[in-house]
Image (cartoon, rainbow, N blue to C red; front, top):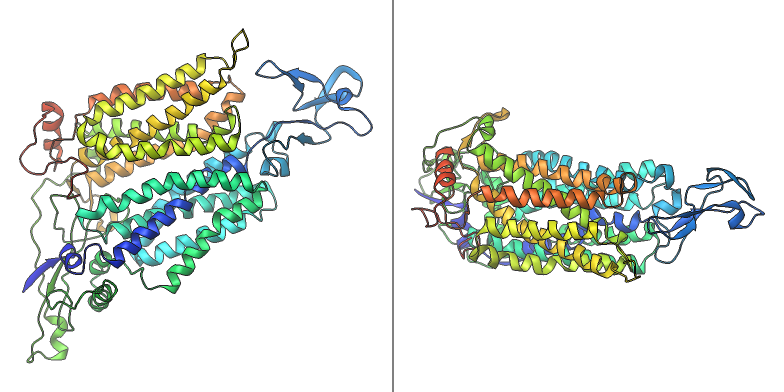
Length: 604
């Protein structure tokens, strides 16, 4: 009886056939529109220039005092009015509402619900709540995807995102807006995380990274497109409907088509023999491949009880398994055994003719989850966690502050998204041929240096020379370099955490250092995205460049500590803490025997 892996089946059914092409197109479509939700607050919650409205029957200059703003210009007060019109001795909070400039923005949640002055942190609060929802969505739908399957969990998340997105545009007040925004964040992250697992489980190692390259690029193109939509649609309710409406087409396309099958690996892991038979036949038909006797599971064929432990480093999409480690990718495969039909086999005996044929994984020392915080893994955990925190904090700091830059806010956001595209395109070749830690350190250093210049360079010189264009260029450059650092961060996180299996979690879930390490550092990283809006708000309370100062310090600290990690470009993936200790101590430059990681090799 011959045992064949899931990748063997995919290879013989065409490893990049119609099914994989369909998955790739869907991922590009999703990554074009989904990220808009995480940054749409730039336009939904934009705050235009405003001041207190004049009292009825009195001119503005007798109702509202003149004050000096942060740029040294004389303007009408935003939050104070004269207690007695015409008498400048006493002031009070605005009692007659506010007047908003229509130069750049139409109707936003700020102008509709007067979320200014005492409520000026409203937009930042809703953004942080949305990020918290994203963290919960990853955890919740990760468990649902394990229990009920990738496809139904993905569809549930996508439908929830669409419903929440539409409901958001009908929010009657700010409280409801924030609550719905939480579910938008939850379902957005859940949709993408589950779909990434689904598509990665249908890709053999050779095509896995390539399949994810296109959505990485469409992510940035989608943000540039959002700036155009926001420019054309100045009412936040209609803009929100426009941003979420493409998901309706996605849902209809998925339900109208049978090109989105359940994960073959997950189906095997659940020991659903008939479902596996049906699924393999279906894949063969979609990919227009002949029914190969050694691939298609006939009624007398059987599936072993083995299953996949981890897929693409997803910590929360894992399940019990008989693990067969793929030493090239660090993933695990499901073994399938096929038994040819026999004329002497009785129908009732078919299910008993099951032979589990699995390879023994390399014997490694099973460790506790707490070993993640013991040397030498502790060093990697701390540095990667700090780096992830800095990246998300600085990235969202740039992304959410484009409205503060001089000039047209729509153009500023457009260029801020555009600079990500060359950074994402350059990452693979640069990190393949250059030392990863050096390039990451350089990226964070340049980013931090640019932020320092922004802090100390005034908007105008004493001679009246306008330096705001220079400040905008420095901000865009910082966004480019922090995006460039992301490529190296993903590689280091994937290649430094050991593969040692951990069995310390309930329900007998099987995890590895690599999965748990990535899970821990990702959680720390999301904290940066959660606090970024509030740090930006502190610019109004502490001093104008408080957030830029913190972003600069974080970038420079990260640039320094990242150099304490070894370069992984030509080292083996550590299988246990001992391997990692050897890598950390020797800093070897030549490939060690076994797996060589260049991160972007043709086999990945």
